[in-house]
Each structure stands twice: as structure tokens, then as C-alpha cells.
Length: 160
Image 1 (cartoon, rainbow, N blue to C red):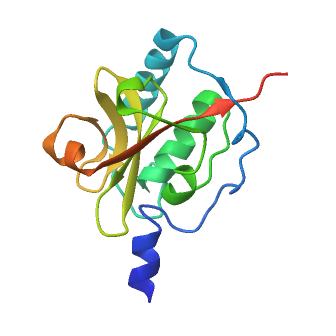
Image 2 (cartoon, rainbow, N blue to C red; image 1 turned 60 degrees about the vertical axis):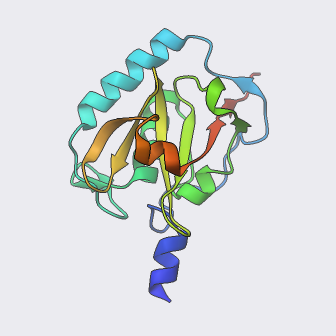
């Protein structure tokens, strides 16, 4: 039973952040300035690079993929994402692989019920918390990630 719960959760444990997102149904993209977003993502990545992967981890002692995505988007975009990969995969709008922009979320099916998430940074690369390498940068065209690619989602924000 415990194995099933772990597998279905993807790379996250119980939510530590709110599961509901106030922006999940609106449609204004926040990707107007790609250059600034790329710079912010790379700066954030360099602060976290090499932090070890830890299932359920949420800090520099160890972090899992969905916590890394949630922290990144909270700190860079003030977005309050849910804590699990499966919940993050329901946010925003689905986009095609060819329409990726920096800051979009990329999802992978890494096992029968296991899921993985990262953040696209541009030039075919994404940052994520890897089970084997910790926080790292990978290429979408890598044979492993290409064969496990599932979907991409663009988070959206409200305008007032």
C-alpha cells in the first residue's frame, strides 16, 4: 500500500503548500520578457545546483522535483504552486513541445505511475531535481528525457 502511495505521488510527498492555485483558470501569459526570465532561471539554478535529491525534501539539505519547481516559481514569480507533481500537471494551459518558453513546466512519465517535473529554461534545456544528480540541468533531446516526455504546461497569471 505504501509503495502505491509513493508511486502515485510522483516525486513529492504530502503537500506543504496550498493545493489550490488562484490563477489556474486565467489566460494572460507571464512570458513577455524571455530574456529576463532566462536570466532569473539561470541565477536561481546556480544557487541550487548540486543540492541532493531527497524524496519529500523541501530545502538545501535535499529537495525533490516538485518542491524545486514550487520553490522556484514562488521565489521568481510569486506563484503558489501545489506541492505534488500530479497537482502541478493540472495547472495552467497545455502547450506543445514546440511552443515551449522559459518558465514553462515540462512533465515526464518515468515509470508506470511515476511522474517528474522540471522548468524549461530555453535552448532545449530544463532544470530539475534529478534522483541521481540532485538539482541539475538536462536536455530535452537526451534519449532518456525524450522517450519519457509526457506534457508541457504554461502557467498563467491574472491581470487586474
